Image (tube, rainbow, N blue to C red; front, side, top):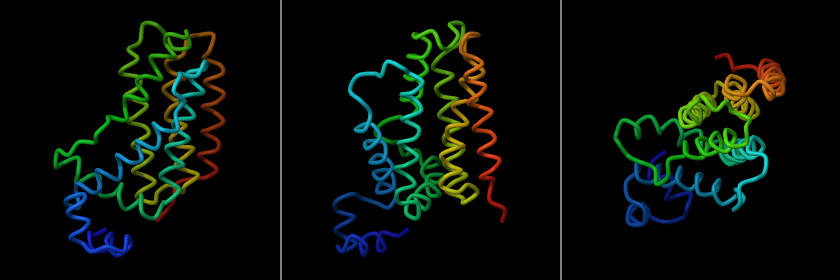
Length: 188
């Protein structure tokens, strides 16, 4: 995506885009920041009683935001690799959403007390990012992206759940695994 293409779609001149946002890199960061803002705006102000349901809802909502304009966001996400190397930072670290979810799950007695909820949350984030980049590369369909993102969360949850919650986590993991196998990975 070039600034000229963005300007044409916005029906403004390229210098207008540059003056309002900056370089192409700054524009890409701003677009991803907007996705994160939409996600945060959609989250309830008060934490939900069920921290696992809240975490699932955040994952579902964020995948839906990307998929809503998949053609554009696939291009943007593919460009994110360059941004990571450049040292550009998002306004908000989205892994904090997953860390907070794991902390609430631990406080609610779903996640084992002897595990670090920060490490667990960051692992959920890493699995989400892997699904996002596979989707951007068109190795996953829109539905496959949503399932893979949920599957990553379920994998961490199944490994970290206390004994009394493990069976439910494993059932979800098995169902999502079957769904992911059904949707399949694209073959090029």
